[in-house]
Structures are given as structure tokens and as C-alpha cells.
Amino acid sequence: MLLWSASVAAVQVTNVRIWPAPDHTRVVFDLDTAAAYNVFVLDEPDRVVIDMKHTRLITDIRRPSRPDRLIHRIRSAPRKNGGLRVVLDLKERARPRSFALGPNQSYGHRLVVDLYPRPADPGIAAAESDTRQEEAGGLRDVVVAVDAGHGGEDPGAVPRHGVHEKDVALSISRELKKAIDAREGMRAVLTRKGDYYVGLRRRVELARQAGADLFVSVHADAFRDKRVHGASVYVISRRGASSEAARWLAARENAADLAGGVSLDEMEEGLATVMLDMNQTGSIRASREVGRRVLSQLGRIGRLHKRRVERAGFMVLKAPDIPSILVETGFITNPRDERRLQDPAERRAIAGAIAEGIAGYFAINPPAGTLLAKRRYVIARGDTLSDIAKRHRVSLAALRSENQLRGDRIHVGDVLRIPEG
Image (cartoon, rainbow, N blue to C red; front, side, top):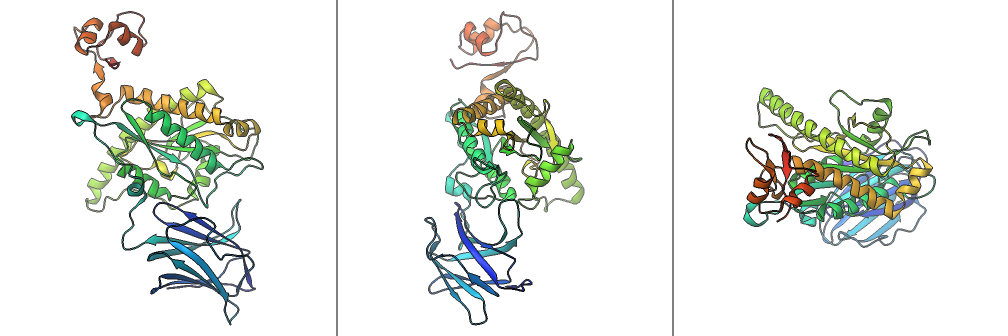
């Protein structure tokens, strides 16, 4: 299929970047202006050909800049009509998807070619083998999907000095996974493990494939005013953002991809609407409670931008069946926050605070069929603390300590966390 667009003077290809991801490879051509182009596939041997009209190459692209499972080498040659032909010699058959991007704060005009393996796309979740696992007795861990914002071609917020938002988000996400995995009855999966881009819809799909009970997207905030600082926690808003800053931020994040959603095609319209509304109502309620606990823990270790959970229209929070929060760990555009976000010890502290808030929520609200649900007891009429301790084969002192009780007074309907025996 031809994908020509208007082009007047000769276009210059100034750089070529390759971003390997678990399920595809992204090739990005940096251009000084928009170019008309055509992409097609050849076999025996397998190749993807990119023809650019009125274009010339001013860089060396003989070999990939990093090892890649799909691309063996890159060749280029000028064409008689003043155009440029670039050939991607492949290690195996691949299906290309191409599109043009306009300038943003980090890059100029770009031509993007995504290569997907054939005949089937194994998917990131399969490549990373992060699937729900059952423990002994049929009980499973609580699964938390940790989503490092941005990645690869999308750097996120870019300060004048220091690291990009995508690198801060990935570092904190890795620490958060460690903190969650260290807790009994909980396990985390990452939507991305390296410097590559994952589409916003795909991030939610990966969480769903992993059987996630919670989706946590990690970011580092940015704003026009460098004085603005502190951490924030967001949940989805049906009516739009709750403040001007939240609306500006949501628009910036959502620009990275198209809107996503859950397929309800097989349902009648009325039923689908009711089911979606019920699911999303429950998820939003749970999201707010998780968000409050995470925000409280973040406030203990650093400054907060807002002391309540904010609401905004982030696409990655729109899964109606998974409670979801987005954590802005600080303002990368604020000098003090930026220094903090570059400190490994501070990143671990931030991750630990997020994990503590999440664990606190699931200690009171464990999903059915999980190990945490087994270690939760709702106090009934006639119960005493000593009887509960004997019933669960734990010491009275351990039961008090686990629930921060000073004495033996308990109330019907309260929930106790049962420590390990």
C-alpha cells in the first residue's frame, strides 16, 4: 500500500534508531522535515523495503546500533529519481507497520517502522512468562501489574539536565517489583523491562493477561513552573480532570497513544453499558482507596503536590475490570525533586512507600482465592482476641503486633490480619 504525503525540497535522514522490544522491533528514521514514503515486503531472502521520495541520507546506517532478533543489517542506496531506498535484511519473516510522527519536545519529524514476527505475535506477556501462578492448596498470590511509563522512542518529560522520565519510571518500577515480591502472598509483573515503548492499550492488555488485581503506572511529573513539586496519585475521572494541572498532564500523557478500551462486542448494547458501568464503579472505588493509602505513605517520606487523590483521564487507568492508579513520583522539572529522583536510595524509598500502601490495601481487601484472603479474619459476635489467636495457631502477642493493637479490645465487623504462624 502506498503511503505518500506531500514533500517539496529534499528531505534529509539525519539518524536511524532501533528499539528492540520483546514482541516487536521499532526502527525510527529522524528527518529534517516530513517525507513521502512507501513500505513493502520482499522474500527469498526476507526483507522490508522503505522508499522515501526526494530524500537523501546524511548518516551511516550499515548495521543495527544494538543486537536485534529480527534485523540482520540495514542497507541503503540513492534512487535515480532523487529518492532513497533503505532495505532491512531480516533474520526471519516480519510484518511491518509504518506511520509518520511530527515534532515534539524531544525529536523532530520521524518515520516509524514497527516489525512484528510472523506468523504469530507471541506477545510481551508470553516472552516474559509473567502469568498468574497458584500456590499450594489452590491459593494464589495477589498480582500487581507495575507499569513503567513511556520508554524507547517516547522519553516522557525531559529536564535540562539529568535523566529522562522513562529511565526514572523504569528504575522505580524495578524497585517496586522487588518490594512487592519480597512480601508474602504478593507478586508483581512489569509491563516493560527495558528501554522500549509499549502502547497504552497494550499495557492494560498485559496486566489483564497476567491476571492482575491492581495496575500501578509509575511516572515522573513535569510542569511549566519549575517551582511546582511533590508526588501525586491519580485515578480515572469520568467527568474529566479535577484541576487545570491534571487536565494539562493527562493531555500530555495521552498523546503517546490512541484511546483504549474493553471489547464488549458480543453483548447487547444495553447489557454492555450496564456491565461496564458496574465494573468501572467497583474499580474506581477500589482505585481511590488504594490511591489514598499510597499517597499517605508517600507523604511520610517526602513532599506531596496534592494531599488528596487527583482524578484525570489517563488512558492506562481506563480498564473497567482492574483497579488502577497512576503515581507521579515527583516533578522532574523541579530541581530538588529531580535530584531526589536521580538518587538510587530515594528511588528505593519511593518504591517502598508505594508497596507499603498497596500492601495495606490488600491486607484489608484481599481478593478471593488468594493467600492474603486466608490470612484475614472478620471479627464476629462472641469472638475474643485470644480465641482468634488459638484458632489460627499464632501467639496473642504476634496477633496484637500485626494489627497494632495495644490491648485486647476488638469490635464486631473489624478485620484482623493474621500473621504467619
